[in-house]
Image (cartoon, rainbow, N blue to C red; front, side, top):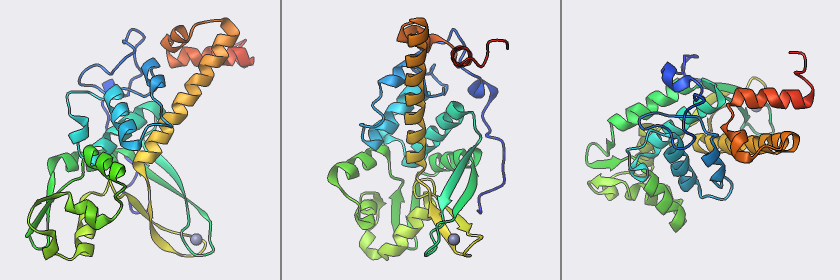
Amino acid sequence: MTAPGRVEAGLTSAETSAPRRDAPRHHAPRGTWRAFGHAEDLDLDMQGLERPTATTAVLAHCGPGGTDLWAQSVAERIGGLMRIYALTTDRDALELVLGCPGPDCATPLEAEVPIAALLEMAVDAAATPTMTASAGALVLRRPQGRDQAAWLAAGTADPEQLYADLVVSGDPADGDPALIAESLEDFDPLVAFGITMQCPDCGTEANVPVDLEGLALNAFAETQAALQTQVHQLALAYGWSEEAILALPPSRRRRYLDLIAGDGASA
Ligand SMILES: [Zn+2]
């Protein structure tokens, strides 16, 4: 893959440390990020919510607040999800296994994308909200959360229709639609994210799309399911309430689960 080499996630120690025991179990303290998996996060219907709504809800729960999340660019929203993903999974890279797109080849290809590189792209996106296309005649802005929601509601999937909504100035009819779509993709790499890979078996080189938003939301849905399982097991074993179990720090929950499983009796 062509992504930069492995680098540290670039989060400050305050962001990477586990939530303190006395931390209130609700939205992240103003100005900070937190991991997904607090009691209130179990209320989110991660399977049932439309994707832009799920992203907005996760960002509202685990992000620093003080922003109109719907007006935030999709790139910045993905950056926020990646930050929360890093805190939730305690990883500094996305470990991906992608199927080779070559004909008659299904070799699994492994790739690692440093989350720090993705966060840098989100910072760049915040710094440059617009781009010029068609030799300067056309100015487009980045898509925002509310654009995603509107396109989803309208069932819009045609790329030309999509970028027509992003025109700040100029006439899209002046430019070549395919070129405009391509330069928008280059301009907004987090939104149309892909990894260039070469298959060692069949030699196919291709840009394999990676759905960063879907990947993060799936991880949060899995976290939610795992927490529910932990509540179930601890409630059965000890008779504790859901509230009491979720108030325990994750390390202590794991310790009790080990004891239940008989793996930690003499540790
Ligand atoms: Zn292949």
